[in-house]
Image 1 (cartoon, rainbow, N blue to C red):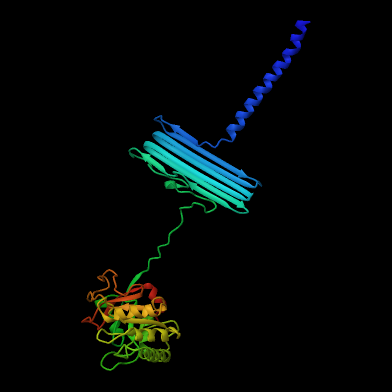
Image 2: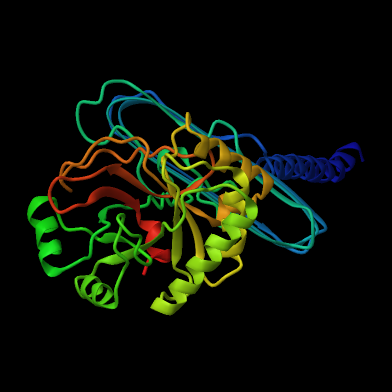
Length: 392
């Protein structure tokens, strides 16, 4: 009877033992699959090392998603090729928190190629936060004797390529640097001989400054024949008004602007072209005149402009600053053509670096850097290419 009882108990013991072992194995398997420990590649051998870490997280329709991805590569050898890829795809989750961290500590003597690619695609209802953080950098220590001791691939220099524009440091930068172009202005009539004189002695101007109407003993006014000649030579016309010698008083500024507008219309100057009030250095000037000219011209079909010696020590400089303080639109909508500093006449090829003087925040259109050339009766200028928008 005792022997028979033992035979019945033994199978039960074995069955229980197997059940316990299966449970333990399942527990460790589940624990390993859900581990949040960093994925780490380490090596200290001397041959080429290739490390690839690829992690993809898919989120379904659960309420919250909290994902932390940490990848660390510690490589010590002669050559290294590291490729890290993390893809997080979450759909229809209400609150998402994603933390991505990649650290590459590389000590190699020859070649190291590192690619870090992080993509976060989140389609959630609200509160979706993505962070590509940690020491997402490449520390390369050692001598670079050949090859590429740096980064290559989708995410060179440790930047993140984020499919959802989260943590993307690869935005294009637009410098939009304006072109500086050479031109002249003259008080004389423009003829074919005059253009040839300028081209033979100075250069090929893209802009030519001319006056509205005759001012006896000072300047000849722009004519229809000149307009046709200049434009047929692909030269743009800068329009100047100089029929005053006192630049003070708001009403005076208004009346001068009204006369300039009428003469420009009679000559056929198109809408949008700038007309520059010529404020010579010996003229009395105040902010009221500047504001009167600006406000009247700004309300017309033309663009307001001011010419003068905008030296910080001169009254014109202070008057313009005050006018800008009284009417903030002046600084944004009026162009300044400054004759400061005076560097002297040059050819186009020997023109100075573009360094005009003007009040702070003024919209500088051009710089008359050289006055009264002995040949051709011209002044020499450098212009910002943006001024072409308001020339004829």
